[in-house]
Length: 139
Image 1 (tube, rainbow, N blue to C red):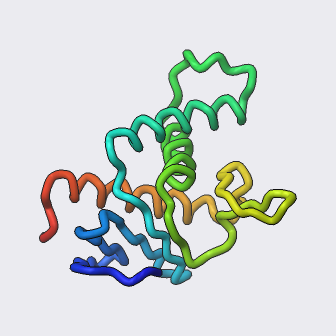
Image 2 (cartoon, helix red, strand yellow):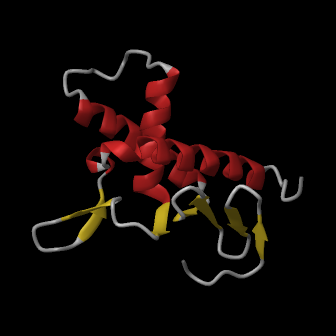
Image 3 (tube, helix red, strand yellow):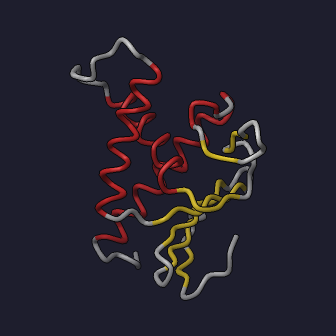
């Protein structure tokens, strides 16, 4: 991970970098680390748009007007967080390569054994973003 300035370390493997506006989530059982931007208002819109695009990619026949259950929304949001906000990671499984060797994040290609990791990381990120926005940096 990149060097950080003015970090606040948390017991759950989360760092909030208040200078650079990133959150690092560490999956403690595997030591995998994921650094995300703290979303701006434009990022929040991009996350919603990405969720809609992912929904259409998964089910092209869906017109997008039906209600989704909470689990489906959680999966879509987690996928969108990775695609929109991830800036660095210690793992390679999040990346897909183009034919010319460039890497990008395509959550539709995440390995099936990483579903729980993706949900854990996204859930932790969501909680830390809320904590950051409401000014809570201590317990």
